[in-house]
Length: 221
Ligand code: G3P
Image (cartoon, rainbow, N blue to C red; front, top):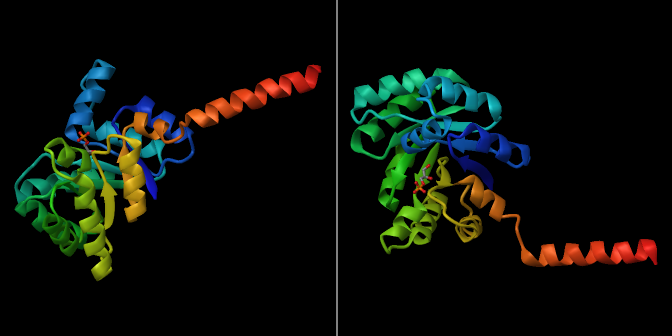
């Protein structure tokens, strides 16, 4: 399973990258706003995506904000050349689906975002999306089942051997990652805090403390 960090904050991206297990980055307009607020300046979107793409080896998703076909195509054509590892994020709407097909024909890879149903995921794959991003946490937020949605998408894609990678998004805690991995989702994108939680276990801490205390006695005794 690939791990992406879901942030536009360069410090967080560096920290995740330093762990040596980072495979990519996902951003969105809200995360750009948050990174700008943190930086105390309005970050230039294109420059910032370029910086992120230089920092990491894997794919970096940069989202369009147009909602019409021509606008999506135009934004995608200006984002894709920033770096070879930039993937354009396109919303799962009718004009978005049309754009995914046209962009694929131009060799531009798309992460199809804001997916909340298996039919949406099937159509995005048929259009040729490189990634589909079901938002698990946001489905859970409305008292529905994000993991069920993910399972349906993984099953449907498996039935037809579709090339689109399933990118589990809107991940809120480690169990989302565990369940997504059990289902065989190709990628999990998560905040840095969740990546860090994947490492933690109280028995590891207790065991380590005991080993170190015993080692101390062994050395001095
Ligand atoms: O990258 C999009 C997705 O991960 C958003 O997550 O927490 O805002 O629902 P969240």
